[in-house]
Length: 606
Image 1 (tube, rainbow, N blue to C red):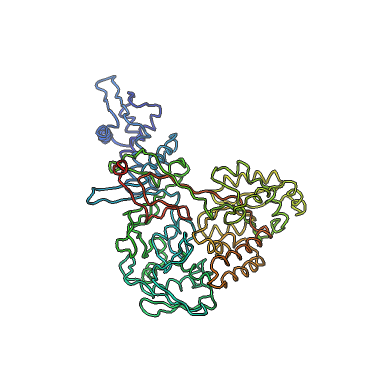
Image 2: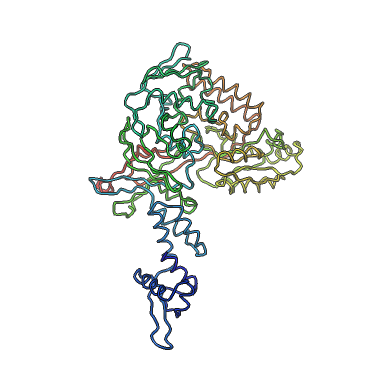
């Protein structure tokens, strides 16, 4: 409250400079602060004790009192906001900054200070040290309940909190044991028996059993909970608890991707008792068997701590804090990737040379989909082709990153010559005339993060004679789908997971996929027939046979010009040489369990 009184005085004397004596009367102060003279003097004395002001009362007739401001408004407000951050209340900190947005550069100063709080932060002494990694994220994580996760960050955190009965090895492209240490199936490939590890504990201390596996998989299949990922287990007829550590799953027909589906984070194993007792709150504060457990989660941050009784390998980090920091990523340079900055126990930042890693993502791309369910010009094949041939993707307004590359499918191709040949303005003009387009508004659904590029598309399409209007959708999953369904086009980014085949199929089959929502019933039926062939491939043929049918999907999508593939790009992170175990997964995040820190002093000696 004392800060409020100080800022009130500064507001009444806007031209006053620090260290400058300003004449003021006690009646003026009582009017401004709405206090009695006695209380005004008490407030002034407290401000002096804080070294915020110097009060020079006038003595005798004709001698006016003077006040000297010792601290700037910006400094005080920053201290207030920093105090809120220290208490873990990021929302109140940003509200404090926003309340005083009349001060130039205040938000920038706060954001750059806040950015310095992230990275690796060891706390305590050698005998009782806590290794914490603080990570900024620009918006709250909505859901951590596996059957309902939507965004990449949700998927990544689910991998830290939960486990699956099997897991997919990205390097070997094989399925490996995890919660299940062994499995077998009959000759028909329709009856599977999984043997579970004993002694695997959920975070709340109860042992995981076959009943939890049955409950978790039945839950995804349950039409009543409306999971977008029911398609993964459509051909599951029955799941039976064989005994405490064994579960049998009966399929209606062989499925070459069945194990892949079980390895997907959407099929993570959850504790039946906690899901039933917590209800919707489970999505906010979930319980799993993974290497990290959620200890708190609100609108300010998600805090996870290492699960000491994890059945596999305990994480090296003790604590992960994901701070929800609006606008932070817009204020700092990409050269300052805050996840990987190193701070010593004294709080200072090491200035040693940072390392960096890049990956050319197999499935990190931006695309434009056409709504084939909605009436409008986009129903015409020639209209869709006109856009594909009329947009020069190499224009700087669009291709604005050195790490971006032209794309022509969900995954990269070695030969990029066909990508460069798409742009053909003469052909585009001819196709647009054939479509009969009369200049009616075309709605483009876009997220707030992609508005700048959408505006560039609007300009380029305007040069073609197409009247584009933007429809910005929110992060609410239901509202996003509603906006996409009523829009003619949608511009967005997809990031595929480690299992490329399954991730591509998800785009066509998951109810929350924008690709799926824009497919006509006729095209969806054709695509699903091809996908059925992928599921029916003999288990012995593996990924080679699957990719042949994936290529068939590609041909059908391109034949119908259902998707305009624009870019893919390299994902990059910078980190200090002392940080070890750093790698990027397909989602562009670092697997937190593997990260560890070599003390700076030892690193220098080496």
